Length: 206
Figure 1 (tube, rainbow, N blue to C red):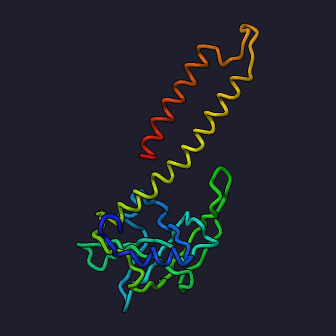
Figure 2 (tube, helix red, strand yellow; figure 1 turned 120 degrees about the vertical axis):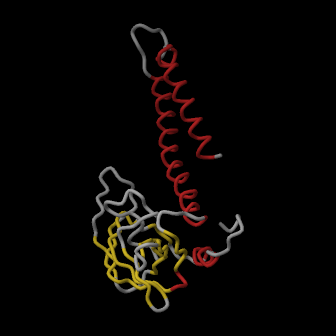
Figure 3 (cartoon, helix red, strand yellow; figure 1 turned 90 degrees about the vertical axis):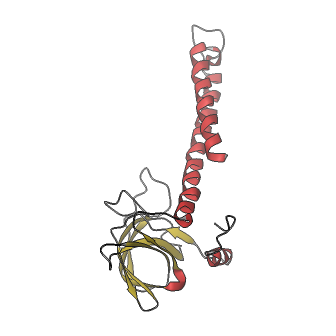
């Protein structure tokens, strides 16, 4: 955002540089349109907003000091808004429920956060947008998150390819005098792996 001429979150960069740990608390059960809509509520209060609702997959639960979240303000039913905010760790009005089960999941200790009128002052309100819309802030979240997620799985795919090539060079067959690396079918499969990973890598890294 800063590089694109929007300095509105300069404070976030400074706090991150000072050691604050920012995490995403946007996941909600039953909401398949995150960031644009919300099952949580935001109510305007003096000097900020009060947030109520349940957030799931709050990555880095044990260590975050600023939890990014969003909720819907329906004080005007005809023009609901989504309030985007960052909640300091020392905020009152929330609890953490340990729901994380790492079986088959990444090790990010992503427990649930239950908001019960948690007050977040205006200085930590990043955006107030019409429900269902996006601006540079929302788009920047996706622009950062999606390539980051993609890079993780690209790394897994690259390593899988390396292991497959290495195993093909070691595996032998009674029908061949050399390793399976010389088998046309194996070579074709390896070539397809290379094409797929190189193409995906270009999307993620470029």
